[in-house]
View 1 (cartoon, rainbow, N blue to C red):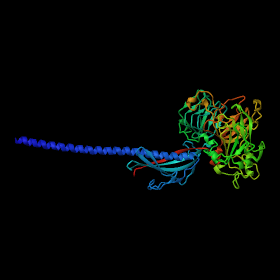
View 2 (view 1 turned 45 degrees about the vertical axis):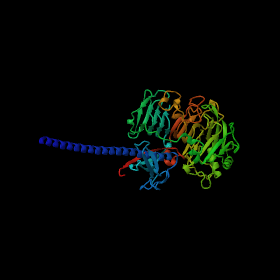
View 3 (view 1 turned 90 degrees about the vertical axis):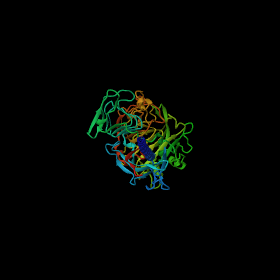
View 4 (view 1 turned 120 degrees about the horizontal axis):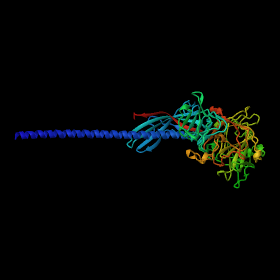
Length: 600
């Protein structure tokens, strides 16, 4: 009996020990589980906070970049780093604290500017857009993510550079598909970029001596059909000091560019560029707002010249587009070669490509500059040597019942522009000039080809489309036999709309016919140029399709025959001081340092 009691007591003690052990194990499990849950939650919250803070960084960097796209500079003051974004320590303007909500995280961010901005640099070899001049602005943005309990979960810092690269430092820059398919030999010495696909082909030899970048695909051959000439398309490689060549049996997608040592790159980031509506005569257009002179040919509702404010119909406009009566009277009092004035209008030039007669705002540039000089237009001490925005900016348009219609049969034509400057004795030389129009633009005769005093000047024409008329062209020349061109020289950067092959961008537009004429027909011709030469130095930029002309590219009688093309990039644009006033640019960000602060 005693043994049974002893055994029972021993068993009871054993059970109690086991229960205690199990209780301890269960307690330990709960502690471990609780710790693991807390760790998991902390990791999840920390990761969530990290991504939220990173989102804040990216938003602020993009805001800074977008300010530059609009031709402005960020301004304001940053908060002090200690207790930044708390109480009244919030900074001001573009650098001030900003709050964002990402899920359960509130993100506060602010921006600091490098005190030595801007930095003028040449983009180093090996980088995209190498050897181009750029203005570089350096910033640091800081971002702090806080959860619902007010606990800081992540603090990040991003140092980035906002680079402004002028578009006129490219021999060709397209915001769409670009085709370079010349018949005769063509040499292009500047960089080439397209935000679309690039097609290279030649009936002879095409030589590209600059870096080639395309956001889309690269093809050897044509877009409008599947053919490809096996003639040389050569890209210069400065590493080997030789030209690398390629040939093809038919249109070929190029995927291996290793041999070109970085001189050919495809699939690069799309560059954000200004919209074509920057040319519009509106208060939202930077070129309208910053122009030194705004001229509008005013038409009545029936399309005839409105003489309410001027016998020529040409009115001077204020930035808000209202008529400046005083300046309009002054302008129309100046004598010149266009119906006795420096400005005027005609309705006699027949455009076979558009199949209509064009109502022109005509102006003689030298006589217009003479008028501005003799009337002291810009005020005492300012005159023509004004360097605001890098020189003179003129906006010209036609305001009539069809101004916004496509097609509309309107145009702006410049004459007397062989020398860019006033011929008045004692007149100061201009620094440069940019002519802007939302309508089709016609360059009549030589432009900026004077090699003596005052010599070459930085110049640009920004328009809906660009047309070249030789010195011998007259509005009375309406037959093919009378439209015989004579050789001329044009030195100016162009920004204008270009047609789209197949009317569709990208590969879905392939083999649909309707070739757009390619880079070699960027300027539109209207004469028989056979045997004559157009010498051109400048830059070709296309941001999209024309808004006011629809005539398709057609070759031959009665449209045009091509000149001998002595064309090339104007290397003077490599010096930022030689760029035309208000040169359009693209802006891209380059990350320098990304840091996470773990001491919060």
